[in-house]
Length: 228
Image (cartoon, rainbow, N blue to C red; front, side, top):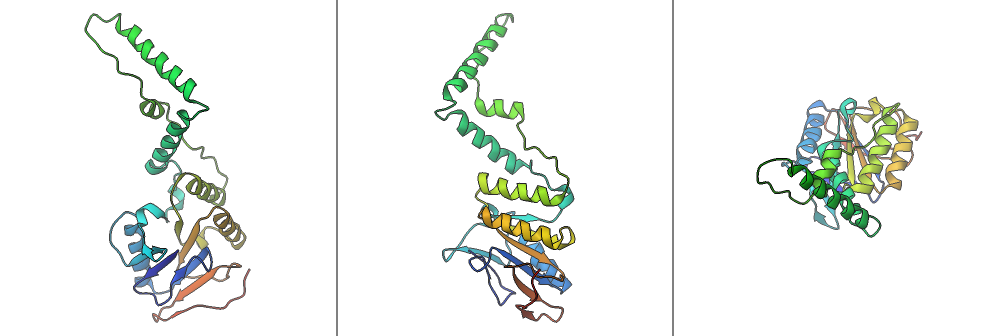
């Protein structure tokens, strides 16, 4: 899988490394790179292309964009919908279908009994597991001591429940130290997720990380630096 931008000479090739950093020291281009990426993961147009097997693939389906880490929420609408869909499938698999049908039948009978005490012609529709799941409001537990732990769980969630293949993180080096970044990169690799960090500056290259630098003079190069 590759990321290509019309303003970059080099490709971000995740077959070479699952962890890349784009260091953009030019403020206007930093805004352009991040702004386009933000729009494209929402399904809008931009200069980025996500390519797999030689074909362009949908950003909104295969990529996520993280910038506001303080308000990062594992229980956003998309994640909750995916969780409920997976629970619905489990409810009707061979291990749970008998109990599920018994529960739905009992609920329907219960509300039928309630309507007998109302002097008005009523009908009770069969209980729906989708509505029941929403009413119970199953959610991911969010109790974390630090951002690093939350990001690792977020990667695991994306890997297990979604089609996401690429995480784009903005200014992540302002929040995690080198050791945490290295561990996060390894966690992404284990879970089959590629990661691109877009930063305005950095000091240390993480082992096995690939880097593109776009400097203030709009020159682009691949640095060879000491790894941490």
